[in-house]
Each structure stands twice: as structure tokens, then as C-alpha cells.
Image 1 (cartoon, rainbow, N blue to C red):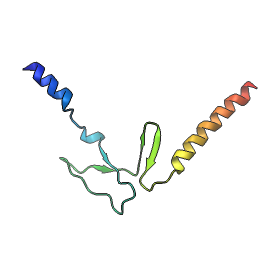
Image 2 (image 1 turned 180 degrees about the vertical axis):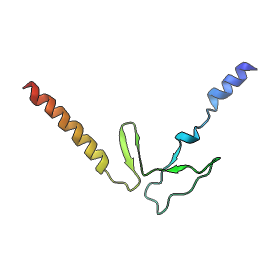
Image 3 (image 1 turned 90 degrees about the horizontal axis):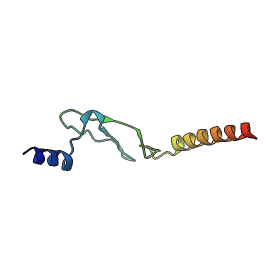
Image 4 (image 1 turned 135 degrees about the horizontal axis):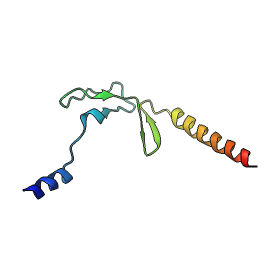
Amino acid sequence: MIILSLAHAWIFPTISIKKTNVFGQDVPSVPTIYIKEVLEVTSHFTHLGSTITSNLSLDPELDKRIVRAAAVMTQLSKKV
């Protein structure tokens, strides 16, 4: 019985409601989703290091990359 319980937990993981947000991309209004409580709406999130925004803007992603490139160039200029 313990093995079946462990297998069930592995196959069907639980979702943490506290860590779950709603993200609507290019929609007039974000839907309200209720799972035991109303989920928080977010306007942006980071996935695999890239920032995705709800208004399809690339500005946060470009700003982050420019800052990283400037830091690298500063480090290179110190070595030369």
C-alpha cells in the first residue's frame, strides 16, 4: 500500500496554490480563476531566464540583457 501511495504522489504531483499565478497574454481582461481561493494575477514572469510580459513588450528582457552586456564589457575593460 505504501508503494502505491508513493507512486500516486510521483505520477500525480500536487499543485501549490500559493505559488500559482494567473497570466493573461494579450487579452482584454484576465480571467478570475478560483481553486480553493482566487489566484493572484501577474503581469510578467520569468521562464528559463527570459522575461515574458502580459502586454507582449520586450523592454524588460532587452533592459536585462543590456545590463548584463554592460557588466561583461566593464569586466573586459578592466583586464585590458
